[in-house]
Length: 102
Image (cartoon, rainbow, N blue to C red):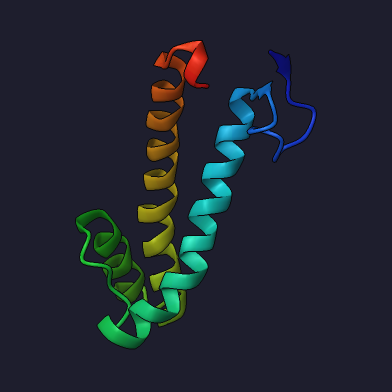
């Protein structure tokens, strides 16, 4: 397979490099942050229900930072690593598939 010259050319018969997965994970994570931050503020007062994220939120609120910033940082801590781990797992699964299936 040839290397991918463009970021979104993954499914056009090329072999994506590792940077494509990191960029995609960050883009997916940031998209999730943009969508979920206002919802968390609206429905749950800014928290996510995740231990690590809520610890960041509590620290930002203890430091008297704005609610929106605390919720945003809370989501970044949770969503970006989640998307990164998910895409690494997908990458490893795809690498393990027979060539006939990829």
